[in-house]
Amino acid sequence: MEITEQTPDVLIVHQGAWTMRMVGAAGVIVGAGVAALLHNASPGALHGSIAVGYAVSGVFFVLGSVLLAKAADRLVAFDRAAGVVRLITRGLRGRTVTEYPLASVRDVALEAKSGEHFMEYRPVLVLIDGRQIPWTSIMTSATRGQTQCVAAARAFGGWQGATAALPLAPSPRIVAVPRGAVVIAGVLLAVFACAGLGIYGFETYRALMWRPVQATVMSTAVSRVGDAEGGTSYRPAVTYWYRVGGAQYVATGVTPITISAGRAWATALSARFPVGARVTAYVDPNDPGKAFLVHEASLLPLWFVAIAALMAAGLTLAIRQSQRRQLVATSALGVPIVSRSVAALR
Image (cartoon, rainbow, N blue to C red; front, side, top):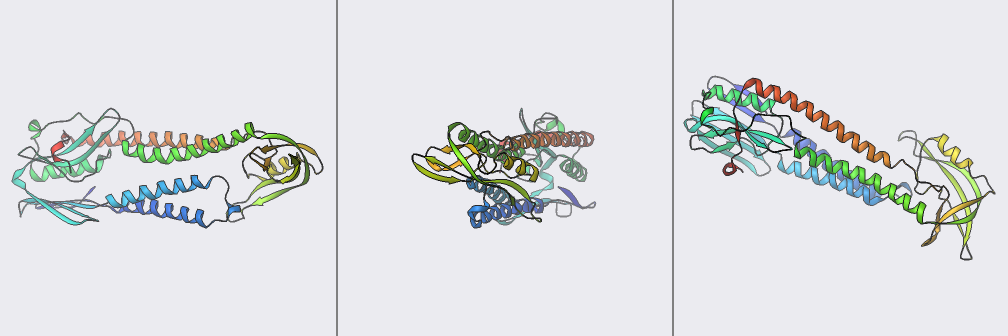
């Protein structure tokens, strides 16, 4: 929110929608793009559950669509010559204009919605009849720009000193991360963390439940995954045979789940299974054609959980620091902060 025109006779405040639109469009594009890649990918190029990929792409697509739908360009124009203040909204539903006489305005304030774990604001016109007319339908914890616009509007209308008649709310304070950020970031990080936990649980289940059998190594090598442009990684390629229930099977699984990493890691793992060696393979009791050799669960999927936790902590710290800066800006200009009016919600 910013002041785009300020003269003795006109004050125009603008809240653009391009940031929200770009974020929303990015979410839709990323979600649709990932889903398209998953749909068109060859089976051999996918490692892990495709359902997790579709779930992540779906989250991005839905959140992006919601942001696009709610994005709206808003103007608040104080016109001394016409004696009115106009609230102009331009969004997907078209353009709407609402006018209020300047004489009907008692003051301009920040409307607060506060709770134990959140505190959000938006500018409002406080009318003589007690109604609070919001400038925007969205409340945020970012008060610096809103406070500057409210202070300019109060100076324009000469409304300073009317705070005694307003239903004042508690002063701004440092609170927990805003609920909107918690919901959006929480969903994304939870999907990320659950993917890691799910993969770890999947490989742990295989390590515990698949039955050991004697196997003979037929060949050993190291396979390259990817290319120089997309990043190259390696994984051990071991072929071995075994018998289950009188039938002979050939398998290539080395670890409980398919993992690729550095060449040194893949080479060292392949070296554990020389050609002709008698080794223990762990076979799926429901599908004897599936097996693996390394009877241990990799901790790599748990890094998904650790990264999600670090991102959550970093986001919380960044928002807290932003809140402190907003608090200083709001307190310095001394604009009134009123309680949220249920009757004026729209």
